[in-house]
Length: 143
Image 1 (cartoon, rainbow, N blue to C red):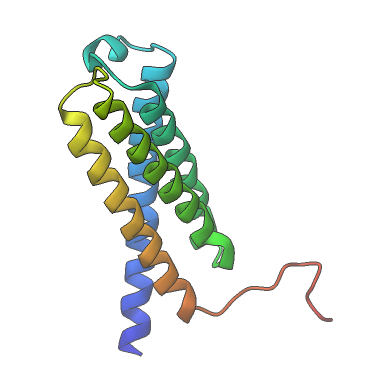
Image 2 (image 1 turned 45 degrees about the horizontal axis):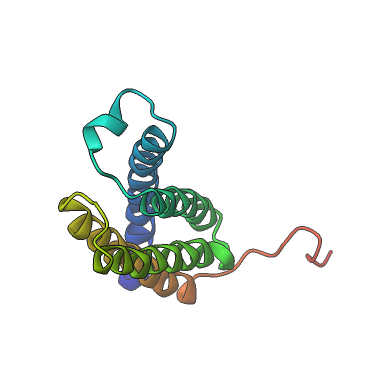
């Protein structure tokens, strides 16, 4: 019973973190991509494909939170896709650096942090989903 209570607490905490982190990420990435609120200027030499990967990750965070809230098996997949997008952006960013591309020094740490954190979100979601009872899709439920 205690393990079930702990997993319930972890699930709610993960949902809250995904919504908050997703909201912050969505706000910042769209503000940079669409030059809102003067944030693009404050960011300096940003790398567009890294910002785009962050935007994609933010959508994944919200989708995963909705899936976890509904106890759905697919809830882990948006986090997996966000992890892949961020890993691809990391490889692209490494190539960008090797070619002498212009960037802000904090981008390296921020991208690494976000990538590791997203992989951690994915691992936590997998752990939670493996032990939870699954709800059937309304069209597959038996009378």
